[in-house]
Length: 144
Image (tube, rainbow, N blue to C red):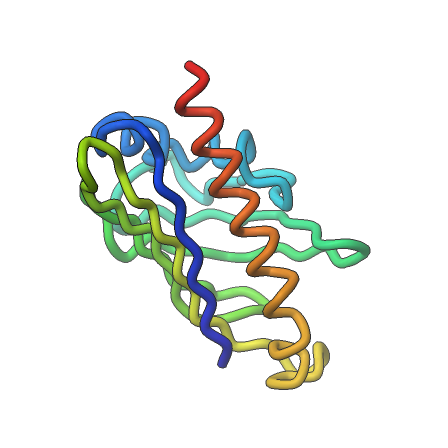
């Protein structure tokens, strides 16, 4: 398993950040590795929401199957059920009139991607991409 955590300070109150974050289908607006979101049912928010997230990192394209396990104005938690398994979460905390957004993932890489070795090699790239994604979100929210 590999654990990755990145965060950004967004110069907007938490309710503004949550107002954007809660729209899972709009994450492709600020996630540079995200190609699309396909919901499994009509449910688009809350615990129990399930969806496929199609991503691309370099030449690698994957479909990540996720289910929402936590949903409140401070966090969205997911379980990964696809090729990569594990847990992830977005956490929002108030910080002097702004919001600190933290993205944490604990992922298990499959054998065909060299398992733990593949995770070790992918970790710096994923860290860089996810940090950029959070910067994109911060820019999106502060330029409105």
